[in-house]
Length: 91
Image (tube, rainbow, N blue to C red; front, side, top):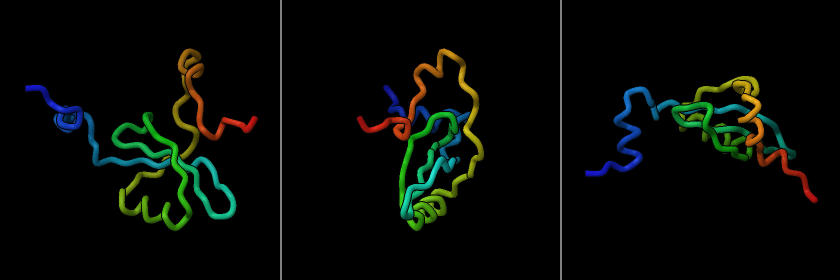
């Protein structure tokens, strides 16, 4: 019987999906917080933007671990593929 990805992930003892990570990467006027959010693996994240109140609630509900800095340095090859939505500029 084939397992779903979520079943396989939860069966992996090295992967703790209860751990949640947040790295604040910026603030946008008037009251928005830009941040990276990760589950289990801090290196694999999504970018999110929430207003300050929603951000506080989100962090509390997810019992996040706050991370400092820009994260681990990337190899030259990996850096070629690294980009963020915030790096995109209007044309």
